Length: 495
Image (cartoon, rainbow, N blue to C red):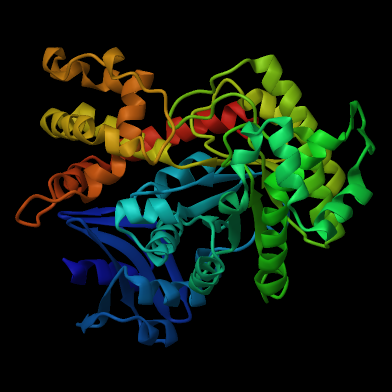
């Protein structure tokens, strides 16, 4: 069978399908005298190379009868990057409007490519947080590997990024830069003091007076009673507001400066640097945003994007909860500050926030970053519900067992009473669960337990069955992803 494929490779032609082997025709490429194509045999993907040359020699694999079959592993991904630069992630140096398309499973990027192929959006195909890596038992190099092979598979040559998402330590930042990240999202939430918001004015004053005098003098001389205007946005910073902002954010601002000076500013390659201040219990006020933005500017910290905590609820896997007029006014204020200081606004937990997407597009003047991640997992679950009812039921029951544990990791307002009893639902109606917000959240936040939990013998309870079923219905999965992400892009004015 491989001999037939190699004959076609040497003749610079391809037949798209051989019995038992899938050939990804879009991947057909050559470097020097070596022709290369990505194929799939069973559930595994391989690079098939023919024709002696530097590329052929650089690839690792089994050689026989004039060809080499090479596993789609990390080492061969690095070879791909060297000979086909479009497969290597890059920074968004043109500052294009961008969308994070996190792929928790390592299978979604081909579908994401179908959605973005005919747009000018800059996609971040490799995006996964440390928490998601832990929940899915993956490493960051796995995330970039799967994105790079998908880009090669689909012949996508317009560039993509790799986001080290929600990183909290210098060690993690250095590690992910070393592995190829082209974007760093610094999550300074552990340096943000959320307790300040609940203090009385008297308690606030006591805590503020306990601060080092040099810190108090610095911020008071700079901001106290300042009147600020950004177009139609006007405000004055009174003492109580300043005390709250200083106590809440001064340590985070200092930490951002440390990270920037020690790591980001001296990095030898182009890099996108995002600041996340959205992991807070209450929305980011325009005054808070202004103080942070001005401090970053005055300290010569250059960022690409900033993610404030907007008003309303940005819960996982469901639409925005809140008033649309209020959201419009809120994001308009944040955009005014961001545009003044030269960066784009970033919307986190952007999956399925369909009602606000037109507002985001309009108020940011089409310049923004939106992050999605878990929605590609939910599309996979829907594919399972349509094609393997028994497996879906087992996943649903496991999700119910693990729901309480999962709520310790994610903030949701899921009401399990609103989810129809699984025993009363016919197989043909199982996809309906993915249209119910409470069921979506149940299945969304328990993904890690579904993917990694094992039985008493050490065998995965659901993982192997899940990936086998998804592999059998991969075309359906790609179609789901294309349609679902395209809906996001259309409402964001990108398609």
